[in-house]
Each structure stands twice: as C-alpha cells, then as structure tokens.
Image (cartoon, rainbow, N blue to C red; front, top):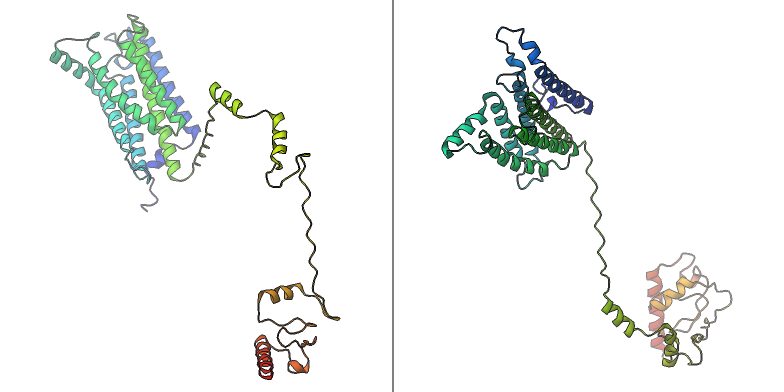
Length: 373
C-alpha cells in the first residue's frame, strides 16, 4: 500500500501544457490585482472607513502580499525537491547540489519577509546602528543585503541550471523584474508618480516571484526526467582543429631564397645522374629512367612422364626434409625411383601407408644402402 501512495515528485507537473496554464493563471492574478488597485478609489467611498485594505498593493495583509508569499513558498518547495534528487547524482564529486538547499532557504526567508515585513525591521535597525538613513528612506540597507545574498545564490544557480534553457531564461527574467522593482522603490524609475509608481514596483515584484516559481518548476521537471533517463545527453562537441600559424614575411623570403626555381630542378636532377625518385641512375642526356633489367626465368625441373604436378607438395619438399618424395622422381639418397601408385605392394599392399610408416620405411632403406657401401 505504501508503494502506491503518490510521491512528492509526482506533484511537479511534467507537461509543458500544464505548466503554461498554471503560469497564465498566475499572470491573470497579477493583472487582476493591478486592476483592482487602479479602481480602488472608485470603490472605497462605498465602504464605511473609505478604504479597502485587501486591494491596497502597498499595504500589509493585502491579497498581493498573500500572492507573493504563496508564490515564494512554492518556489522554496520546488528547490527542496531539486535538492532531494540532485544529491543522489553520482558524478557530483564537489557537492554542487548544496546550492539548492541554500536556494530553498532564501526563498523561504523571502516568503516570511512578505508576510512579516522583516526588511522593514532590518532597515530601522541598521539606520539606528549607523545613525543615518542612507539613500531615500533607508531602504538601501535591506536592498544591499538582498543584493549581496541573492546575487551570490543567483549566479551560482545560473551555472547549475545552464543545462535547462527554459529554467535559465526564467531565472534571468526574475532578476530583471527584481531590479526594476528596486529601482522604482529607490526613486530611479517614475519618481513621485503616485499610484502608478506603486503599481510598477509591486507589479514587477509579483512578476519576479512568478518567474522564480516558473524557473524552479521547470528545473525540477528537468531533474526528475533526467533521473529517470528520459532526457538524451547532448552530443559532445568535436575538438577544434589546430590553428596553422601563417608564416611571416621574413620566413617567406628565407624560404624563397632557399628553394631554387622550378625551371632549374630538371637540369639539376639530370646533372646528378639520378631519377626523380632518387633510386635508379640515369643518363644525363634524358630524364626518363632506364627499363629494369630482365632476369632469365627459372626453368622448372624435368618431370617424369605420367607424373602430376603438385605445387603445394613441391613447396613442402623444399621446406621440410622428411616428407613423402614426389611421385615419378628419384629418392635423394637411394636414387631409386618412387612408384607412382601409393597403394602398390612396395608400400604395404592395398592399404595407404601413414606418414609415420613412410618415414620408418625410408630410414630402413637408407640404413641398408649405408651397410652395402
């Protein structure tokens, strides 16, 4: 029963269509919250206190804060899923998978900051400790801390996620949205624009959180499919050919001085008395090498009448000493003719003699000749 329970990795969508629908749903929520904030003054006079806190993008406890906090929390969970899979990869000898644990922690802290306004407390604490607000209302303190931590984690994540182009692109768009939101908060973009400035910075912040969730989801999908062996490895790049250094002008002039002109090569070869392939001496009067000397053809030894030529047996006779003498020829030592029929009575009747028997018979005849002499 436990094996049939759904796993955490089953919660990660693996179809691009489902991921696109979820992303479009998030974009619809962001656009809806921006629209409600734009029409909030027209709806506020219908309330008793004249305000609608749920539609206020700049206020605490609004729908925008809830959406940003939930998006960052889901991104943290997706990073934790990637960490739980990546730490089992066998070729990660340097432990690069630990960056996903740091990423999950960063997104979790950002989610808590959206709900509890931790950056506001950090801003006031640093302003009191340093005795100065810095740039603007003191937001430069938490912006600098965020830039230091997120810059290091984001750069390391880009190197880790470079195999998946979709997640890498989404992470770059996340950084662009965050930079735009910070520039609007510090007054570099649309300063003193009122409601439009709030819509710009809060809209870029919510879009950045949404792109961050998309990046973590795409890479979690990639890691899960890679662990299951469903992603084909990329072909290795062919090595680049070695560059041939071009000779300098001085080297070209030296080479031209050392090499004689083509017209003088033929007389030099003729004067030396050798052909173009430097093997056969030739007459200086012409450049063609003489024809090779023809050696007289070797005549084959005479073969007795009725003998059948056998090239393989002739080669064996020249190579080995104790072989069957060829038929129709004389024995080397006894000078007696060898009968053509191997099945005759001199070889033991109608039965064909074996090689050992022929050797023994030959040795006996040789000993008999030596005794007679």
